[in-house]
Image (tube, rainbow, N blue to C red):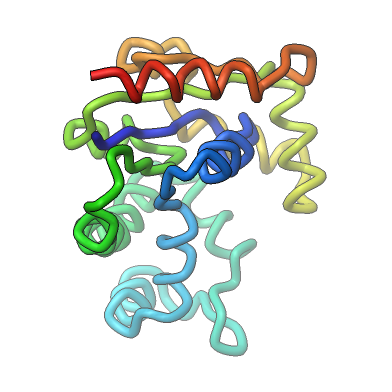
Length: 192
């Protein structure tokens, strides 16, 4: 069974994924694969430079420069996604083959719905958290301003929009315990 974990930036997708991993479920982190390919895949790097100019510094993408380009311009973001998504899809297909012995496989991605990747999955788990909590988490994690976080949030579908696609919802608001919620979903996924 292929399962997706999605949610807005700062919702706690990676935390939920780590709990699933501790339960023996392999997790493919699409966002990490995308970040890695931006910095290591020659074909992706060439396409990014061709499309956006030299946004690299000392062999690594200048994340702040790139964020300014794509999070303020929907067309630029679509162009970047058009470069990266085929690579992530290809890596995910290989990963599925390598992990085919497992009954449940998880793909974690912030834009699982927006990218259309959800169409290839059997179940979707949505991770939700209050907006202000998400903003605080991302500011602390990434060392960015509130304005920058809000710009990123604007490029993603809302929780309400994603809820239409979700089979399960985990609330990560810092008040409700998340491990029991994950175990409940895990047990439901294991049932035929």
